Image 1 (tube, rainbow, N blue to C red):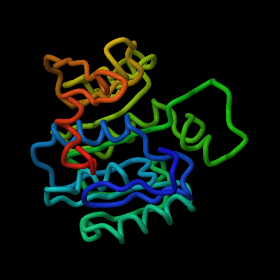
Image 2 (spheres, rainbow, N blue to C red):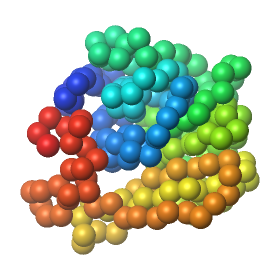
Image 3 (tube, rainbow, N blue to C red):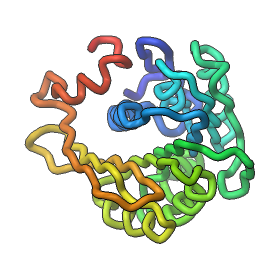
Length: 236
């Protein structure tokens, strides 16, 4: 998925000016979150990047989305991807740092595909470090600001490496956010989980858990993956 663009059924993502490209796990995350969202007036996409999640969640629903991105060249591409889509009136692209951003708007849904890695080898490209690592936004800060911007009955969706699953839940609990749904993601039935998708709520409750396998064999997506992505992927 390293091409300069990626075409979906209803929109196209151009990504040559963004450090982080469209990935299969990010697409799965957007589709999974979409399946969980029952109703929402206002949605916040933290670290919107190319606009992938905002565009996926705009499809087939009436919603107002604020998509905030800190990196200027990626923000320009975010704006263009939104403008070229059928959902341009629904998404507001904002350039800025979520740590400094203020609004009186309560969000029923907050979503983020955040910096994944901390205390690991860095790229020599600043944009890549902002996109992949916790240099600009730690997990503590992410959950703190998600909670600050959520409505009292809102939900926060996050995609993380599987090895940070317990850490993520513990940090979320410190911000009084509790897991409602957890999906471990495996590349195949023969792989260990490599990603985890979590839906958090401000209310403590029983947690639904599942495992989603991307491919059931070398050439075919799993039935669960196809069910989630069929409204987005061109060839499903």
